[in-house]
Image (cartoon, rainbow, N blue to C red; front, side, top):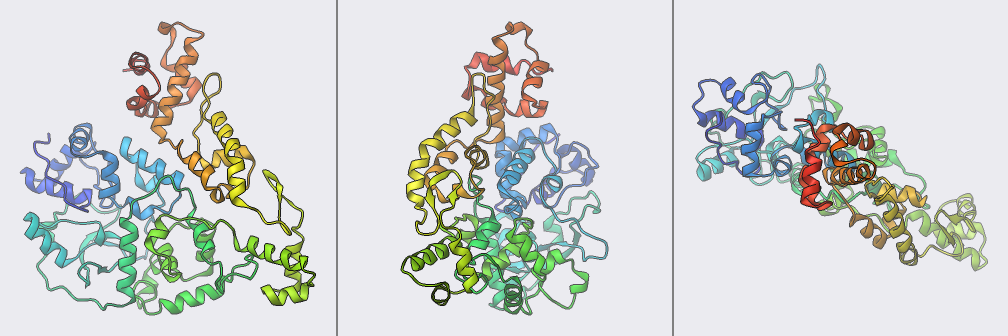
Length: 500
């Protein structure tokens, strides 16, 4: 039984916190401390995330801080921020509410045979400051970010312990105060490696905007506009040229191409192959290190990367518009090609778009008449409102979550159309719901629907399950939010349906 839980320090890993609990609890062995905290005392405590804790431990922790805050602020969750809005939102809820396994919910890299094992690292200067401020050292997240070997704050190299970060590691709690030695820090050069480490840390520590649905690959691709890595019309990327320039830029950077590369997995070597860039731009690769490498090379600030926005008009649209204007002046394709860049065949292809309708907006044309996104945004706003009402549901219509994807499908728009319509997008985002809130709305709707055909005493959990398809853990997670959609009495009646 937990008698005392120490304060958790800034940026401290939950693993470190649990290890300090063991050190201060008086337990003769770490197994006894794990028995106080975990569902099973032989559970291997996860260095980077939170292992499944028991109900008593969870109750005590929630009195100190919400579980969601702990996941976001004391685990390596932000490292996977680029895995897609829907995926990380679901992962955050599952890890906060049900103790979900991060290694199944997030694209956590799994080590391979023959690859160098990762170990817990620390900054000697940070450890000294912690001892002075709190009387003890602790393991922090900054030093656990993959591929960072420098402390951006103190400009010194991180020290590596013998403690392996691995699923094969024994279920033991290593206390930082006993493992971190007083050593002279090795200063690092104030060069590219330090700048990249500083950049990665700022991205890692930036708040995650769960309402921003812009895929990072689309955003990074949009930042190629106007560069030599994108054709004049914007239809072709010069990936080989981009890769060569990236490798020249990062040449000699430790962790990208070093003497131990044969022992390192590609996950840690950074961008070395064309397919890695192609997968990033097509949103198939969400690796934090590679995305930061690419964004830093392209001159994208951490603020822009963590709060991405797409341009109102793509390079292709601007090119087509320019071609149409020059055709209207009577110029031929060869003269236009010299004016705008590209070949005469490219110019002729751009001109073929003249007269084609934009899906969902019949009045707009490409070619002679460019798309006025501001006008479309204003005119489509009432239609988007109607779509939202139909998706939101209620009455006899089953409620659904209002998302950008759902509205786009309902309007029969191209995938990224909503990104060019800020007023419409803002209206959609106003209806954003976390899954437990949506489940509560769905549960209230189902209960009221059942009341029309049955008496209150004849409604059972099975009836709700058939209509909503909610699992028991989903249903229970919705309980705190039922009063948002029903009076207190109805909310209590719904809670009472769940079998004890």
